[in-house]
Length: 227
Image (cartoon, rainbow, N blue to C red; front, side, top):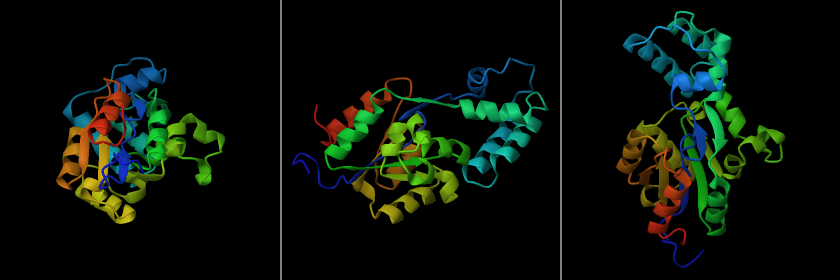
């Protein structure tokens, strides 16, 4: 390990959406990306509450994508069919940010382990993670950076979601690392705050401002990567 790497930093952990992978952050944007025409749909707090509850259950594996889609269709009073809801869901994830793979490679070359900790569901995860753990499978080529990450943690597999402290504790138990051993990047302030309460070196990444450059700068300040 290079001498300029602080010995307490053992692993760099990434959120995926908005950090390594570009995503659509709103329902409207996802619908447009899926090619769904604009339509007259109910809006307001009641609809948002129903959708949020469904999203929360999907992310911790309580329901499958089909049940989620049926619920979304009902939440919008049928303005979207269940099939259209699935199409919008699939369109949320886009491509990886430029330079993402090079960042992971640089960390591995520096002797630093990598992990991801993502609030996600099975349908998205199946696109991120190589089938049967085989990085040579064609499916993995859609997100080659995620395929290179050494340890991968997902909310739907753990039955826990950020910012619940329990998901960070589960990460610590599995890796045997904690506190300042871990550098963590996430695009949601509440997730960063929760990680900091565990003593992690956590940083909020702005998905609108070159996430890879932001992470490289934080890592330089931690002495993990050079200029």
